Image 1 (cartoon, rainbow, N blue to C red):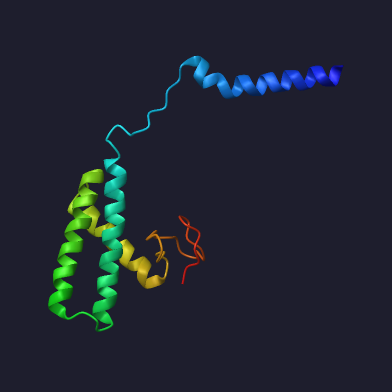
Image 2: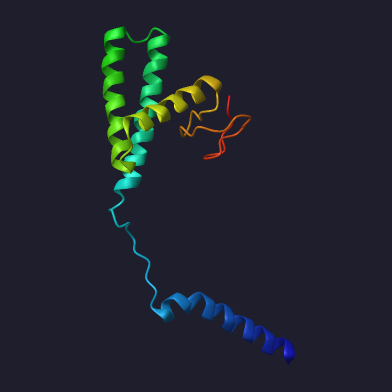
Length: 134
């Protein structure tokens, strides 16, 4: 009898715990206050940085001539800078510092080639997606 009573009390407790937000009238908005624009800008920034990295790789490997590389570089850099300004209204100095950090990470093998995350020194795996570095 005590076991049945204990099981019933636990079951009721779990049901009340699950239903608590509904019973209290809590609401969780399905959209962010800015309509998801910050996340979209962050994704655009990451995509443009990857494109910039790929363009540099293609240029140095001889797949792109200098004129095409400069054109792509200018386009990608302006996309990155625009997205970064919309995200945090950063100054040009801060933007250039972040770009240098990404380039340094690429040179050192610390920038993840899958997600673009710049990892700390001594990392063997990406802190963002878990893929192996180097």
